[in-house]
Length: 280
Ligand SMILES: *[C@@H]1O[C@H](CO)[C@@H](O)[C@H](O)[C@H]1NC(C)=O
Ligand SMILES: *[C@@H]1O[C@H](CO)[C@@H](O)[C@H](O)[C@H]1NC(C)=O
Ligand SMILES: *[C@@H]1O[C@H](CO)[C@@H](O)[C@H](O)[C@H]1NC(C)=O
Ligand SMILES: *[C@@H]1O[C@H](CO)[C@@H](O)[C@H](O)[C@H]1NC(C)=O
Image 1 (cartoon, rainbow, N blue to C red):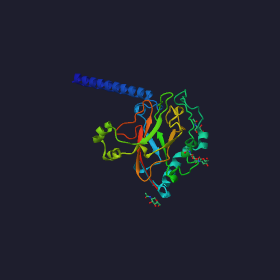
Image 2: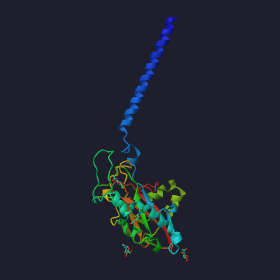
Image 3: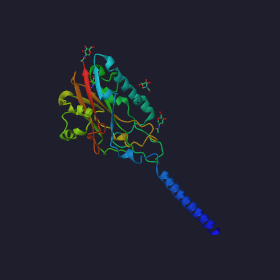
Image 4: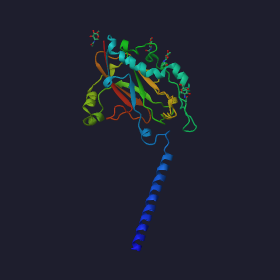
């Protein structure tokens, strides 16, 4: 009887130490894991994603449809652009950010939790698409401006001397590769690919800045915790002579080393597809 109780006690003690050491090991693991995770650099997803793009003004289904002679049909685009450009106000940019030299990275050494300065991107850089000279951004004359922004990726650096460029054209016939992939597309995408735009429907596009690129000085981006005043660079496309009274499918792509812009099932990785339908 005595022996049995002793053995029971022993088992309890062994179990106690077993679980205690298990708990200790787990705690230690968690602790070291938390030590190695820093909030300043992305650990998994953010860094590997290829850049996506976003355009403004906001347009339902990316269909820019308006009648030049009816301001009600395009006024919301102007409001959307003005709202979007608030943060790019020249005086605000001068107050928040520094004027850094173009053509080179703006690298800031120091601790990763130190606040980083950001480079100015003023709305006046967008010239005829800044809304400063022409407060309707060209919509009142059937020459709409559309702004393009590349999504932020912490640590992303374009190739030195080779900034990421924007290039737009009428979306012509789908490539053979696209044709083959059509079966995997949604009906909506199929409709878009089905447009057979004529190369000449756009005629001319003015880009602002004229280089149509995102200057290297806006890279790298250090993340929202330390790079609080960071202002994403923009490229404005001014469609000055688009064919009127018909839908013109346009594809704008990012071009640059390491940029992916032809993922069939994702129309926002490295490119954007929209339609201009300007009535007069
Ligand atoms: C933007 O700048 C203009 C002058 O250029 C100024 O009148 C306006 O108040 C500014 N807006 C903001 C939100 O800073
Ligand atoms: C961010 O902008 C504010 C002014 O709006 C300025 O006081 C602050 O110093 C700026 N931060 C950095 C890190 O430049
Ligand atoms: C920009 O707009 C001005 C008038 O606002 C015009 O004279 C000039 O030709 C335009 N520039 C371009 C490149 O379209
Ligand atoms: C555009 O608006 C004008 C004036 O309201 C109208 O006469 C014209 O038919 C409209 N154009 C189209 C293509 O609906």
